Length: 156
Image (cartoon, rainbow, N blue to C red; front, side):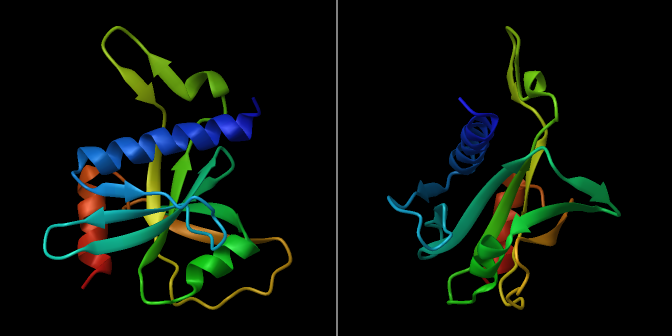
């Protein structure tokens, strides 16, 4: 298997674990033709949904409280589109060394590094040819508390 495929599958394992541990539900489209990899749903007060695009990478830099990541222009333009339903980029950052991606012991199974999220909705579509550098705040951790915070902030 290619390293990119393995990264993608590990990022899905991480995201699924967080969503279900937080008590939310997940739906995944059969065909991804609009840049949406999945939808997180909360059934607390009515049905609340946030669409997401998931990326996994070892190629990023951390500067001034932000993760800088080069996102393909097509993906960026899909995420800035505002069609009424909130959408976010979930970025799972991983160590460069593949032997560190998944570490286990008799006590734990650990997916290394972390996922973060950012909403790019309402931004200006890019005319770049290949990529757009996006900034993802380190404060937007995609974990159980972060997922609840994401719903509070985006569904007001």
